[in-house]
Length: 226
Image (cartoon, rainbow, N blue to C red; front, side, top):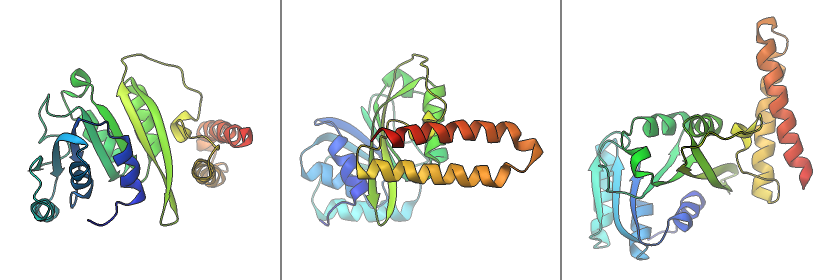
């Protein structure tokens, strides 16, 4: 089997040993196959909304003679039932889409699985969703892949309302201690600065400009620590 991408390798390393995993948007099932070949999981449910990649996933699974991966067709977490997974992987989608998938799952809070989430875009929307719905971000791992920087978010439902500084949804637990973390924060800083430049001249955007300026200050402080 070909090596996992950096993003998938980070997720692979975060999956608890002996876990029951649901991989949402599995595509060709590279992550489930790697988890199975390393005897890392008891059971893996590989889900995708489209039949074509799921057929390819089935071919790949059959090629390796793997028996503990089940493929299921469906939207988001709808193919997975309560009690079937203690670890949920959702990678390679926008943060808004991941938020929609989580919000549509009626057993998520009761079962309280570990969430391993890798947004390609709009990570701040995903963090905002997690915060407002009382999930706690327990860890983040920034990575660089093909010249772009991403983060893998690990989260669990806590049920507790916690205080977060303004701008946390843009930084999460990422710090400037590592090169990957610093580049991630710099990327966010550039996005926010560009947005401020675009809207600061608009009278009806005054409040938004003030808010984003506070976000910018938050990230600048994180960058100054290291």
